[in-house]
Image 1 (cartoon, helix red, strand yellow):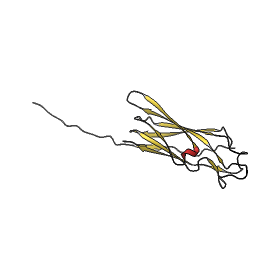
Image 2: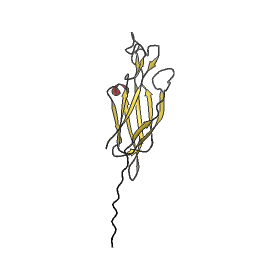
Image 3: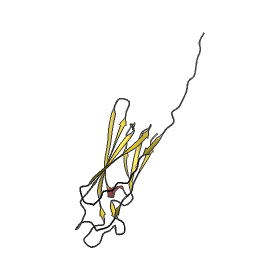
Image 4: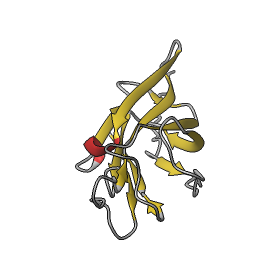
Amino acid sequence: MQLDVALNGHIVQRCEIRGGESIDLGELRGGLVAAADFGLDCNVPFDIQVVSTRGGLAHASQPLGEGPFSGTLPYDLNVTVPTLYPEREVIVRASFLSSNMIGRAVLSSGDGIASGRGSLELRTREPAGAGLLAGRYTETLTMTIIPRV
């Protein structure tokens, strides 16, 4: 006598990113470094899309500057994400210049899935011209996780 049992199941795809906080850099100049961690829960390979609203830390009312003074402070953004493969952990990294993130910049996990975290490091560059125009500077970075199935 024989008994056959058919088994099936599924795992629901999930992909989410958590975190997001304001970072106050204080007195702006070249060479400043700021870091932040974020949570990442994705059980499929993914891309992280990063978009800069202003292409740099931009003066609130005069992003083009005035006279010899610059109104935008460019920066480099380094994104690091540990990913899991069946046999090992792989660190995925990408570096982007702020002006190149206006359209969008993408970091791919390859075939890996998220290990639960990631980190950002922002490093300001030297301002152009005679320095920065006095005033308040802002920038917004938007990170979107896109599952690849």
